[in-house]
Image (cartoon, rainbow, N blue to C red):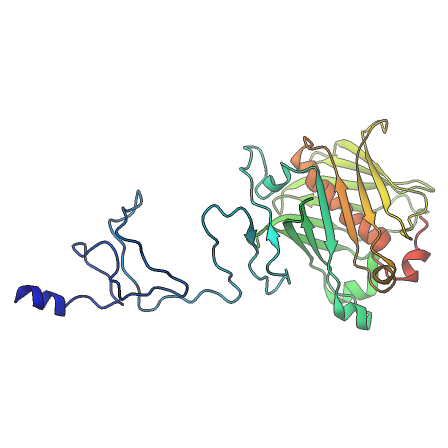
Length: 326
Protein backbone atom coordinates (compact mmCIF):
# COMPACT_ATOMS: atom_id res chain seq x y z
CA UNK A 1 0.00 0.00 0.00
CA UNK A 2 2.85 2.39 0.86
CA UNK A 3 4.58 1.58 -2.41
CA UNK A 4 1.45 2.37 -4.41
CA UNK A 5 0.95 5.57 -2.48
CA UNK A 6 4.54 6.58 -3.23
CA UNK A 7 4.05 5.94 -6.93
CA UNK A 8 0.85 7.99 -7.01
CA UNK A 9 2.61 10.95 -5.35
CA UNK A 10 5.73 10.86 -7.54
CA UNK A 11 6.98 14.31 -8.51
CA UNK A 12 5.65 15.92 -11.65
CA UNK A 13 8.05 16.46 -14.55
CA UNK A 14 8.05 20.20 -13.83
CA UNK A 15 9.48 19.93 -10.31
CA UNK A 16 12.88 19.12 -8.86
CA UNK A 17 13.51 15.61 -7.66
CA UNK A 18 14.47 15.04 -4.02
CA UNK A 19 17.87 13.62 -3.16
CA UNK A 20 16.48 10.12 -2.63
CA UNK A 21 14.94 10.00 -6.07
CA UNK A 22 16.89 8.11 -8.79
CA UNK A 23 19.63 10.20 -10.40
CA UNK A 24 18.05 10.44 -13.84
CA UNK A 25 14.62 11.56 -15.14
CA UNK A 26 11.88 9.02 -15.81
CA UNK A 27 11.51 7.52 -19.29
CA UNK A 28 8.39 9.59 -19.94
CA UNK A 29 10.43 12.81 -19.91
CA UNK A 30 11.41 13.67 -23.50
CA UNK A 31 13.69 16.64 -22.82
CA UNK A 32 14.28 19.65 -25.05
CA UNK A 33 13.92 19.39 -28.85
CA UNK A 34 16.45 17.01 -30.37
CA UNK A 35 17.03 15.20 -27.07
CA UNK A 36 17.51 11.46 -27.54
CA UNK A 37 17.10 10.42 -23.94
CA UNK A 38 19.55 9.64 -21.16
CA UNK A 39 21.42 6.35 -21.55
CA UNK A 40 21.20 5.60 -17.86
CA UNK A 41 22.39 6.81 -14.46
CA UNK A 42 25.53 8.89 -14.63
CA UNK A 43 28.00 9.84 -11.97
CA UNK A 44 27.89 13.49 -10.89
CA UNK A 45 30.56 15.85 -12.15
CA UNK A 46 33.15 16.97 -9.61
CA UNK A 47 32.02 19.99 -7.64
CA UNK A 48 28.31 19.53 -8.41
CA UNK A 49 25.46 18.07 -6.41
CA UNK A 50 24.76 14.38 -6.72
CA UNK A 51 22.26 13.35 -9.35
CA UNK A 52 20.47 15.27 -12.05
CA UNK A 53 18.34 18.17 -10.72
CA UNK A 54 15.40 17.10 -12.86
CA UNK A 55 13.62 18.91 -15.68
CA UNK A 56 12.13 22.37 -15.34
CA UNK A 57 8.61 23.35 -16.37
CA UNK A 58 9.71 26.62 -17.96
CA UNK A 59 12.55 25.22 -20.01
CA UNK A 60 14.13 28.19 -21.89
CA UNK A 61 13.82 28.21 -25.66
CA UNK A 62 17.14 28.55 -27.54
CA UNK A 63 17.67 31.97 -29.18
CA UNK A 64 16.70 32.46 -32.80
CA UNK A 65 19.37 31.23 -35.19
CA UNK A 66 21.11 29.00 -32.65
CA UNK A 67 22.44 25.98 -34.51
CA UNK A 68 23.11 23.87 -31.44
CA UNK A 69 26.31 22.29 -30.25
CA UNK A 70 27.93 19.67 -32.44
CA UNK A 71 29.05 16.23 -31.32
CA UNK A 72 31.95 15.97 -28.94
CA UNK A 73 35.29 16.16 -30.73
CA UNK A 74 33.85 17.64 -33.91
CA UNK A 75 36.78 19.63 -35.34
CA UNK A 76 34.95 22.54 -36.99
CA UNK A 77 32.54 24.87 -35.25
CA UNK A 78 29.82 26.95 -36.85
CA UNK A 79 29.01 30.57 -36.19
CA UNK A 80 25.76 31.63 -34.56
CA UNK A 81 23.77 34.06 -36.70
CA UNK A 82 24.87 37.63 -36.10
CA UNK A 83 21.61 39.53 -36.26
CA UNK A 84 23.24 42.93 -35.87
CA UNK A 85 26.66 42.43 -37.40
CA UNK A 86 25.31 40.53 -40.38
CA UNK A 87 27.70 37.60 -40.26
CA UNK A 88 26.53 34.72 -42.48
CA UNK A 89 25.57 31.49 -40.77
CA UNK A 90 26.87 28.05 -41.62
CA UNK A 91 30.47 28.96 -42.62
CA UNK A 92 32.99 26.75 -40.81
CA UNK A 93 35.13 28.40 -38.15
CA UNK A 94 38.72 27.57 -37.38
CA UNK A 95 38.96 25.63 -34.09
CA UNK A 96 40.67 27.68 -31.41
CA UNK A 97 44.19 26.45 -30.52
CA UNK A 98 45.44 26.59 -26.91
CA UNK A 99 46.39 30.22 -26.20
CA UNK A 100 50.05 30.93 -25.28
CA UNK A 101 50.63 32.52 -21.91
CA UNK A 102 51.60 35.92 -23.33
CA UNK A 103 48.96 36.04 -26.09
CA UNK A 104 46.19 38.67 -25.92
CA UNK A 105 42.77 36.98 -25.66
CA UNK A 106 41.33 36.18 -29.07
CA UNK A 107 44.64 36.27 -30.95
CA UNK A 108 45.45 32.59 -30.35
CA UNK A 109 43.93 31.88 -33.79
CA UNK A 110 46.89 33.68 -35.37
CA UNK A 111 49.60 31.68 -33.61
CA UNK A 112 49.44 28.70 -35.99
CA UNK A 113 48.97 30.39 -39.38
CA UNK A 114 51.20 32.24 -41.84
CA UNK A 115 48.49 33.38 -44.26
CA UNK A 116 45.20 35.26 -43.90
CA UNK A 117 42.47 35.80 -46.50
CA UNK A 118 40.13 38.78 -46.19
CA UNK A 119 36.91 38.81 -48.25
CA UNK A 120 34.72 41.89 -48.29
CA UNK A 121 31.02 41.15 -48.57
CA UNK A 122 29.00 42.64 -51.41
CA UNK A 123 26.34 45.06 -50.14
CA UNK A 124 23.29 44.90 -52.42
CA UNK A 125 21.95 48.30 -51.31
CA UNK A 126 25.29 49.91 -52.13
CA UNK A 127 25.43 48.27 -55.57
CA UNK A 128 21.90 49.31 -56.54
CA UNK A 129 21.78 52.83 -55.08
CA UNK A 130 25.38 53.90 -54.56
CA UNK A 131 24.51 54.63 -50.92
CA UNK A 132 27.62 53.87 -48.86
CA UNK A 133 27.02 51.27 -46.13
CA UNK A 134 29.21 49.91 -43.36
CA UNK A 135 31.73 47.46 -44.77
CA UNK A 136 31.76 43.85 -43.60
CA UNK A 137 34.55 41.33 -44.05
CA UNK A 138 35.24 37.65 -43.47
CA UNK A 139 38.76 36.84 -42.28
CA UNK A 140 39.78 33.25 -43.07
CA UNK A 141 42.78 30.96 -42.97
CA UNK A 142 44.25 29.22 -46.02
CA UNK A 143 41.79 26.31 -45.58
CA UNK A 144 38.78 28.60 -45.94
CA UNK A 145 37.85 28.37 -42.25
CA UNK A 146 36.68 31.66 -40.80
CA UNK A 147 38.92 33.14 -38.11
CA UNK A 148 37.16 36.45 -37.52
CA UNK A 149 34.33 38.60 -38.80
CA UNK A 150 34.98 42.33 -39.20
CA UNK A 151 32.37 45.07 -39.35
CA UNK A 152 32.80 48.81 -39.79
CA UNK A 153 31.20 51.08 -37.19
CA UNK A 154 30.80 54.49 -38.82
CA UNK A 155 27.81 56.84 -38.91
CA UNK A 156 25.86 57.42 -42.12
CA UNK A 157 26.87 61.06 -42.54
CA UNK A 158 30.60 60.30 -42.28
CA UNK A 159 30.40 57.41 -44.75
CA UNK A 160 28.57 59.32 -47.46
CA UNK A 161 30.23 62.71 -47.02
CA UNK A 162 33.84 61.60 -46.63
CA UNK A 163 33.71 58.48 -48.82
CA UNK A 164 36.84 56.30 -48.74
CA UNK A 165 38.79 59.06 -46.93
CA UNK A 166 36.53 58.73 -43.90
CA UNK A 167 37.77 57.97 -40.41
CA UNK A 168 36.43 54.66 -39.17
CA UNK A 169 36.29 52.17 -36.34
CA UNK A 170 36.58 48.55 -37.43
CA UNK A 171 35.48 45.91 -34.93
CA UNK A 172 36.84 42.38 -35.41
CA UNK A 173 34.84 39.63 -33.74
CA UNK A 174 35.58 36.00 -32.96
CA UNK A 175 33.20 33.05 -33.34
CA UNK A 176 31.43 33.94 -30.08
CA UNK A 177 30.74 37.48 -31.26
CA UNK A 178 33.29 38.95 -28.85
CA UNK A 179 35.29 41.95 -30.03
CA UNK A 180 38.93 40.88 -29.95
CA UNK A 181 40.57 43.53 -32.19
CA UNK A 182 39.63 47.17 -32.72
CA UNK A 183 41.01 49.34 -35.52
CA UNK A 184 40.87 53.14 -35.29
CA UNK A 185 41.60 55.30 -38.31
CA UNK A 186 41.51 59.05 -37.58
CA UNK A 187 40.71 61.67 -40.20
CA UNK A 188 43.87 62.56 -42.09
CA UNK A 189 44.90 64.36 -45.25
CA UNK A 190 45.13 62.22 -48.39
CA UNK A 191 47.41 64.47 -50.45
CA UNK A 192 51.12 63.71 -50.78
CA UNK A 193 51.70 67.48 -50.81
CA UNK A 194 50.85 67.65 -47.09
CA UNK A 195 53.46 65.50 -45.32
CA UNK A 196 52.57 66.85 -41.90
CA UNK A 197 49.30 64.93 -41.57
CA UNK A 198 49.59 61.53 -43.24
CA UNK A 199 47.48 58.39 -42.84
CA UNK A 200 47.61 56.32 -39.67
CA UNK A 201 45.76 53.47 -37.99
CA UNK A 202 45.84 52.17 -34.42
CA UNK A 203 45.37 48.48 -33.64
CA UNK A 204 44.09 47.43 -30.21
CA UNK A 205 43.82 43.85 -28.94
CA UNK A 206 41.79 43.54 -26.80
CA UNK A 207 39.83 46.80 -27.31
CA UNK A 208 41.46 49.68 -25.50
CA UNK A 209 44.91 48.05 -25.34
CA UNK A 210 47.15 49.21 -28.22
CA UNK A 211 49.40 46.54 -29.74
CA UNK A 212 50.70 48.52 -32.72
CA UNK A 213 50.41 51.38 -35.15
CA UNK A 214 50.82 51.81 -38.88
CA UNK A 215 51.92 55.24 -40.14
CA UNK A 216 52.27 56.46 -43.69
CA UNK A 217 55.67 57.83 -44.70
CA UNK A 218 55.89 60.76 -47.07
CA UNK A 219 57.13 59.76 -50.52
CA UNK A 220 56.52 61.55 -53.84
CA UNK A 221 55.79 58.38 -55.80
CA UNK A 222 55.40 55.27 -53.65
CA UNK A 223 52.98 54.21 -50.92
CA UNK A 224 55.27 53.57 -47.94
CA UNK A 225 54.28 52.69 -44.37
CA UNK A 226 56.09 52.07 -41.10
CA UNK A 227 54.82 49.39 -38.70
CA UNK A 228 55.32 50.17 -35.01
CA UNK A 229 54.76 48.21 -31.82
CA UNK A 230 52.74 49.39 -28.81
CA UNK A 231 55.70 51.55 -27.64
CA UNK A 232 55.86 53.34 -31.01
CA UNK A 233 59.12 51.60 -31.90
CA UNK A 234 59.66 50.92 -35.61
CA UNK A 235 59.46 47.19 -36.43
CA UNK A 236 58.77 46.72 -40.16
CA UNK A 237 58.36 48.61 -43.42
CA UNK A 238 55.67 48.20 -46.07
CA UNK A 239 55.93 49.51 -49.62
CA UNK A 240 53.67 49.27 -52.65
CA UNK A 241 53.91 49.92 -56.38
CA UNK A 242 54.03 53.38 -57.88
CA UNK A 243 50.76 52.83 -59.77
CA UNK A 244 48.23 51.12 -57.54
CA UNK A 245 46.00 49.68 -60.25
CA UNK A 246 44.23 46.32 -59.96
CA UNK A 247 43.41 45.83 -63.63
CA UNK A 248 43.66 42.09 -64.47
CA UNK A 249 46.40 41.46 -61.90
CA UNK A 250 47.08 41.34 -58.19
CA UNK A 251 48.61 44.35 -56.45
CA UNK A 252 51.33 43.50 -53.93
CA UNK A 253 52.47 45.56 -50.96
CA UNK A 254 55.72 44.06 -49.69
CA UNK A 255 56.41 43.64 -45.97
CA UNK A 256 60.11 44.27 -45.38
CA UNK A 257 62.59 44.30 -42.56
CA UNK A 258 63.37 47.66 -41.00
CA UNK A 259 66.48 48.11 -43.16
CA UNK A 260 64.37 47.14 -46.23
CA UNK A 261 66.90 44.51 -47.31
CA UNK A 262 64.70 41.46 -46.71
CA UNK A 263 61.10 40.83 -47.80
CA UNK A 264 59.33 38.86 -45.06
CA UNK A 265 55.77 38.86 -46.44
CA UNK A 266 53.23 40.73 -48.49
CA UNK A 267 49.70 42.11 -48.57
CA UNK A 268 48.03 41.39 -51.91
CA UNK A 269 44.90 42.91 -53.35
CA UNK A 270 43.54 40.06 -55.46
CA UNK A 271 41.96 40.53 -58.88
CA UNK A 272 38.29 39.44 -58.64
CA UNK A 273 37.14 39.77 -62.26
CA UNK A 274 35.78 42.51 -64.50
CA UNK A 275 32.18 42.46 -63.26
CA UNK A 276 32.96 42.63 -59.56
CA UNK A 277 35.73 45.17 -60.00
CA UNK A 278 33.57 47.40 -62.21
CA UNK A 279 30.34 47.47 -60.22
CA UNK A 280 31.34 46.97 -56.59
CA UNK A 281 34.04 48.01 -54.13
CA UNK A 282 34.04 44.56 -52.48
CA UNK A 283 37.67 43.43 -52.52
CA UNK A 284 39.64 40.31 -51.67
CA UNK A 285 43.01 40.44 -49.95
CA UNK A 286 45.67 37.94 -48.97
CA UNK A 287 48.25 38.49 -46.24
CA UNK A 288 51.43 36.44 -45.91
CA UNK A 289 53.78 36.74 -42.95
CA UNK A 290 56.32 34.52 -41.13
CA UNK A 291 54.77 31.79 -39.01
CA UNK A 292 56.92 32.82 -36.03
CA UNK A 293 56.06 36.52 -36.31
CA UNK A 294 54.83 38.03 -33.04
CA UNK A 295 51.10 37.46 -32.84
CA UNK A 296 50.57 41.15 -32.08
CA UNK A 297 52.35 42.07 -35.31
CA UNK A 298 50.10 39.64 -37.19
CA UNK A 299 47.11 41.57 -35.86
CA UNK A 300 48.81 44.80 -36.98
CA UNK A 301 49.20 43.33 -40.49
CA UNK A 302 45.44 42.76 -40.59
CA UNK A 303 44.91 46.39 -39.59
CA UNK A 304 47.33 47.51 -42.31
CA UNK A 305 45.29 45.62 -44.90
CA UNK A 306 42.14 47.54 -43.98
CA UNK A 307 43.99 50.86 -44.17
CA UNK A 308 45.31 49.97 -47.64
CA UNK A 309 41.83 48.92 -48.75
CA UNK A 310 40.28 52.26 -47.80
CA UNK A 311 43.15 54.32 -49.18
CA UNK A 312 43.36 52.71 -52.63
CA UNK A 313 40.52 50.28 -53.34
CA UNK A 314 37.38 51.54 -51.58
CA UNK A 315 35.99 52.74 -54.89
CA UNK A 316 34.16 51.07 -57.74
CA UNK A 317 34.64 51.15 -61.49
CA UNK A 318 36.33 54.18 -62.95
CA UNK A 319 36.73 55.88 -59.58
CA UNK A 320 39.31 53.28 -58.59
CA UNK A 321 41.18 53.57 -61.86
CA UNK A 322 41.33 57.38 -61.61
CA UNK A 323 42.68 57.06 -58.06
CA UNK A 324 45.22 54.41 -59.00
CA UNK A 325 48.18 56.80 -59.03
CA UNK A 326 49.54 57.89 -55.66
